[in-house]
Amino acid sequence: MTSNDRDQAKEYVLKKAKELDVKFIRLWFPDILGFLKSFAITVEELETAFARGMGFDGSSIEGFVRIDESDMVAHPDPTTFQILPWRPKERHSVARMLCDITWPGGKPIAGDSRQVLKQNLQKIAEKGYTFYVGPELEYFYFPSSTEPKPLDNGGYFDNTPEDIATDLRRQTILYLEEMGIGVEYSHHEVAPSQHEIDLHYTDALSMADSVMTHRAVVKQVAQMNGKYATFMPKPLPGVNGSGMHCHMSLFKGKKNAFFSADDKFNLSPEARSFVAGLLKHASAITAVTSQWVNSYKRLVPGYEAPVYLTWARRNRSDLIRVPEYQPGREDATRVEYRSPDPACNPYLTFSVLLAAGMDGIEKGLEPPLPVEQNVFEMSEEERRTRGIGTLPGSLWEAVCLAEKSEVVRTALGDHVFNSFIANKKIEWDRYRTYVTDFEISRYLPIL
Image (cartoon, rainbow, N blue to C red; front, side, top):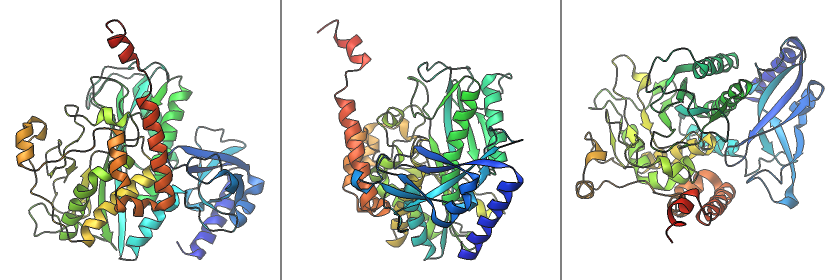
């Protein structure tokens, strides 16, 4: 966006805020773990916010700065201005904008994960590329945050009778669309009380902002109706967990750089190298795409979650799937990366996915042969013979692999990389020293 475009966007927001009788503007930004942070200003401060930003103490925000470097400035992005549809609209309405975080002098702070994604996108823009992403976010509805009991017993694509979960999903979609976020699909997922809302494919930065909004709206609607929505990867044992499959492509101008009419899979050499890069770095980037201890309760064989480092067209047991080409829809050519979960930081996740794929393109990597068989049903010996590796089996294993990866370090930048690794090591240490209910029930009576 040029400075002239940004000035026009600011003028539009100032005008719109007056027309809609906006009184409060919530300034949103993510910490390095992907938690949404915010504070509110009144409309009287809006011009100041655009001109100079709004100062705040960033020392308590995870991964931002040290306590002796607390002064931060939030600069609202006028292109993200939207009215919050669940707040009063007739008088004193409330809006929100996503922010970029800087030092008081205007220099971006290294801990701003939105800025991390911007920097990665700028690198490929210099090569003529635009990165597009379409995630599928799965989640559960429960009675409360302490009561993980399903609200329904529906299954995949079930047309269940009208119930509270159906109403929650419907209201969520209406709110998302009111906020300018296009919804492509919504449906019941495989597990009881598990649902999915897919967003329209768009550029990676807009999509990361939309993922943050999506999660906030899903939770807000559930809370307004006395229920609880969770993006926890594996809240229930014995059933599927929640994933965030990411459909991705690169464009050069208006042309999809992933499409080729001469390839069996309709994939260009760039697309094939992108797949090869993803497979090469998949284990190293998993600490970012699946960043919680609980993430690895989902990434196990048998519940449709991909754990094997393979790719194919139709096979949904593979880590990477290439949706089948439909004639006349060259723009829809894409690759689907299936291991991320919806509790990730989307800015960092899109950054490492892009970096892994681009490393494949820059080095001209070739992917292995696609695996169309069900990898889950192969014997361990057969997988070993075919050279099929696996994703990390625990957060600790994933963090150790990420820590050795120059691709991950470069994608995140030293500050976020070091802060993220340190945070995840602390989480693992707390987990491994915690005595669980399983251990009490299993061992206390017999040992």
